[in-house]
Image (cartoon, rainbow, N blue to C red; front, side, top):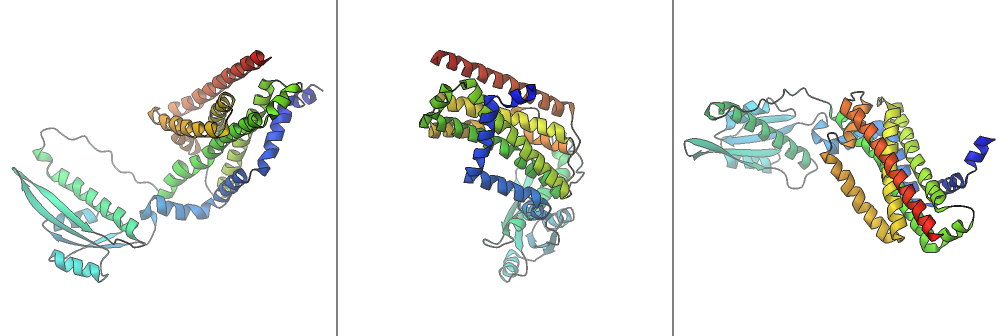
Length: 359
């Protein structure tokens, strides 16, 4: 009997009404369908998306580069450390450009050694296609080739340094698909519903205020706190539900995801924070356009400010998903959860104060 009374409370009625109203919001339904499509067909989409994220992840691509000048040998040595590139020596830059114009090579690199005091500098000029489907891939490959050339030059000239350089950790290698899936795709699918929930709360509250229906609700035996609770709880609940579905679909498509319950707790905390921001702006401003603009700006600023944290929220999700959580990772989950609960209680107290003043 007590359970029936608990779930028949006005706040739950309002929460169910808010969730049912989402089916009439075409923009929200479209966003959910897009996320569903990405999660449901992730094993296929990740191949194309990864090629945009890291063009060199495309197998079978080989870039032909013609080199000429004073640093040909060094470029040949650098090319042995870069995958997907073949370097051939050409006598002069003009001959190399002729091959480039004829389509026999994909790019041209001409080098020259310029005296600089007691040492010398390497000047590099590169020519790549201006408008070509492979331009991005060629540019990325040339950049890696020149980066490797710079590294080799630094090693050769280490004796001329006054201070010993810092040792660079050995490159252990990693899969582009692995990095993209866990650091880009998974956080995107999990955090997008959280920010959408905050935006929906802004719309819902300001619409009630602008249309005058909020006052009608308060005439009934429903307090302002119950109204805010109902709207907030509905939007907080829907985000982790979506996140859980997305993770199950990713696992169905072969993406292993560990610590799902901790991830859902973390997503719930992030969602609560966005809903708190949306609720505060909606109650304070009472105007939809103004509140939505402020919410968008604050969401960007607050999410951007997480860069100063010991660990970015996207990294927290990735580390939990691959079962490599550290003390900092678990600390982030606990801290965000405590912060979300604390701020939500403060907003409820503020709304309760407004309700008492209006009465």
